[in-house]
Image (cartoon, rainbow, N blue to C red; front, side, top):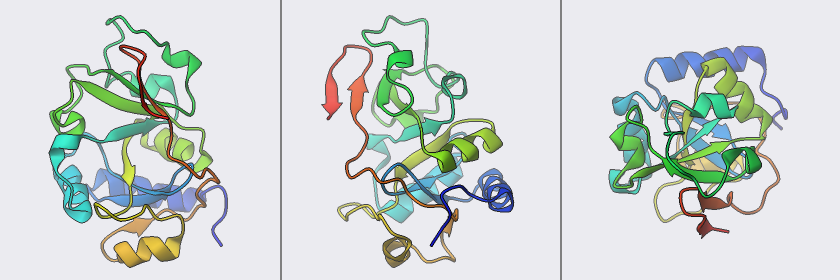
Length: 187
């Protein structure tokens, strides 16, 4: 069984892989996720290919702090919901900044961001010194994996390295709110 917190050597390995443009699997609050450097379009395309997913949907980003997410959203635009009241934990759709790559947003005008409360994600993002892509580690149409065994049914260790740590105990995906207008997109 994996530890709750990733070891320093494993975090260094994950960061080196992200910087080389690889995709990694890592535990989230309830399932395994796939991630990469959001600025690396080639790495992002690897995730889309692995998931058999179109770019038009966009993906969300996770961060260890609101400060890490600030590069991707425009704090000057008016919001109905204050991120400080919902982070960590809730995924918010915020107005995308000019620095947010179009491939992250897909066809959307906003960007989905979550400051995570999961220790592995927080450690990973702190070591990476920024937000990372976060999408469930499953091919389109299949259930997201809650166990390493199921993750390995979808992706071999040769195609996707997994950060040795445990997913959280949440049974449902994070709530998604549109902070621009206050609408609930997923409860």
